[in-house]
Amino acid sequence: MSKKWQASDIPSLADKRVLITGANSGIGYHAALKLARKGAHVIFACRDQRRGEAALARMEADSPGLRTELAILDLASLSSIQHFAAAELAQHRPLHLLINNAGVMAPPRRMETADGFELQFGTNVLGHFALTGLLMPALQEAAAVSSADAAGRPRVVTIASIAHKRGRINFDDLNSKRKYSPMGAYQQSKLANLLIAFELDRRLRAANSPIMSVAVHPGVANTNLFQSGEYSAAEKSFRMILGHVIGIALNTDSEGALPTLYASTALDARDGGYYGPQGFQEMRGDEVGPAKIAAQANDAAAAIRLWQVCEEMTGLKFFRAVVDVAS
Image (tube, rainbow, N blue to C red; front, side, top):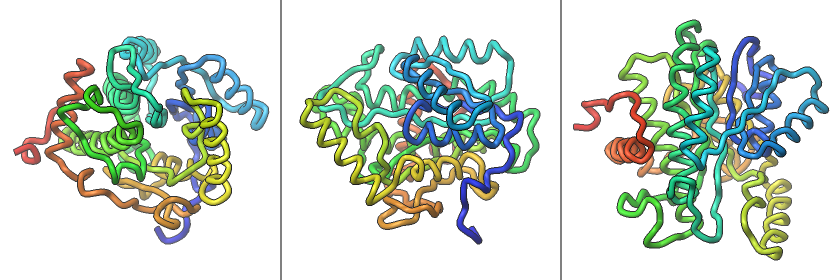
């Protein structure tokens, strides 16, 4: 990149439909705000209706007249995802941008989704895998009417984390039934997000699809991931203080949204790219560039195996494997 990319560089998004999971707070909210200001019709896909409505009211107060809507979606329930996707597809409208942003981070005790999966793997990985697959017809519809250049191509943007560098995929215990580590399960889920994003890119390319798969991480930002969840009063206070320190020393959630905005709209974002802040240890900074990828995230064989496991767990198949990579 010849100059530092800024949110002001986002092109006009008039007539573009954008869906962001977890858009009611943190990075998702700030990404939604900036995309809507550029003319996009932004769908807030949120689990909690009250919080979703509060986010829309906050945005209306900040920037009146933006095109937004609320849709209820619980990524910890395959049934909710299926019902949401069916309602979305029934509208027969193209989807130009899907931002898989929502996430669960390190609950202190092991919890499960409605379908019996460990909460972090089930939400962060399986929930977004199923949502992406089910919404693929809407993305393909957008591709059919969009130009072939980067500005017009639909995109799937996956939010990963620098935590993926410490992650390991435990195929023998993906749901942490034998042993649960709050951060270990989170790190595994973020590594899995990156593996799936890269594998989706390979499958899209093999299918000659114009849809882009791009991944990002926000560095270390003060988001509600640090404060939401089932914690003791003392730990909640500690996490709140930690969040304020992070906001001062590292990134605010607004700054943390910049890589997401870049991957979602920048003309020079590439297929299969992975982007993040360029400051100290990739933890902060207002300059976006290629992020460092741990060796285990470049394991194509593991990515194919994980994709197959996700297919089995969700009961959903989309796009075939790339034969020469699998062999």
